[in-house]
Length: 407
Image (cartoon, rainbow, N blue to C red; front, side, top):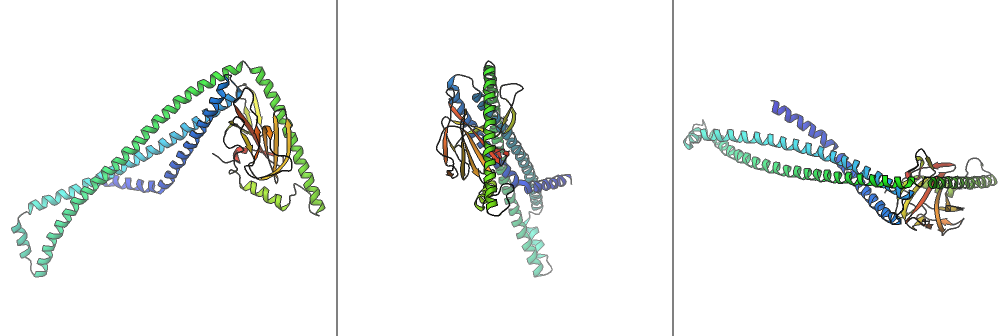
C-alpha cells in the first residue's frame, strides 16, 4: 500500500508542476534572453574600456565603465544562478518521473510473471481441451475457447507494454542526462564569470588607487560640472516658463482657460503619444551603456561625496552621433562650458541632450524620432564619448532609464 501511496503523491506533485510548466518555461526563456542582453552589454563595455585604456591614464570615465561592467557581470551571475535553480528543479522532476515509470514497469513485470506461472501450471493441451469440451453447451465451449485466445493476446500485449515502458524509461534517462549536462556547463560558466569578476574588481581597485592622486583635480572638475548642471537646469526652467507663458496667452486670446499648461489639440496628442511610449522610446545614441544613473549617488572615487544627476549618462564610442528619442520641436540650443545642449519639446514633456561639440539643428526645427541632432564631445584624454539625457514633465525631472527601451 505504501508504494501506491507514494506513487499517488508523485502524480499529485506532477500535476501541480504541470500547471506551472508553461510559466516555468517562460521564466527560463526570460532568463536566457536577459543573459544574452547582459553578455552583449558586457561585450560593448569591454570594447569601450579597450579604447579608454589606450590613453594609459586612469580616468573617471574608465572607472564608471568598469563599475558598469562589474554591475552587469554581477547581474549575469545572479541570472545564471536562477537558471541553475530552474535546471535543478527540472532534474528533480525528471528523476521523479523516471522513478514512477520504473514502479509501473515492475508492476507490469510482476503481472507478466504471474501469467507465465499460470500458463506453466496449465501448459498441458489435454487440460485445455478437456476444459473446453466439458462445457454444458456449445455457446459455453465457444466462450472458453475465446478466453484462451484473448488470454494469449493479453499476455502478448503485456510483453509489448513492458518493452515500450523500458523504451520510455531509457528516453527519459537520456533527457535527464541532457539536463544534467546543461546544468554542469552552466555551473562551469558561472565559476568562470566569478573568476573574471574578481579580476575586474582588482582592476577597479587599481584605477581607484590611481585616481586618489588626482583627488584635488577631480573635486575641481566635479565642482565645475555641478555648476554647469545647475546652469543648464535654470536655462531649462526658463524655457519651460516661457512656453507656459506663451501657451496661456494663446489660450486667453482664444477665450479659453489660461491656467496650468494649455496645449493645442496637436500638442496634447503629441504629449499623450510620448507618455504612451514610456519604456519603449529609442536610445539617444545607436549604441551605448548607462554609466551614470538618475538621482543622487555616491561619487565613484571621492569618498563621502554625493553626485546629483538630473538625467542619465550614457557611455558610447568616440564622436558618436546623438539623436532625438521622439517627434518634437527644438526649443533651445544652450551653450555651456561642457558643450552644447539641445532641448526638444513633446507637448508638456521635454527631452534634453547634453555634451555636443557640434549640432545639426536650430531652435524651431521639427524633429522626427531618431533624427540626428549632433556630434558628441570626446575629451583629449578620452577615447570614448558620453551623452547626458534628461526628461522633464514641465518642472518635474523624470528618470530617463524608465522611459527608454530596455536593451
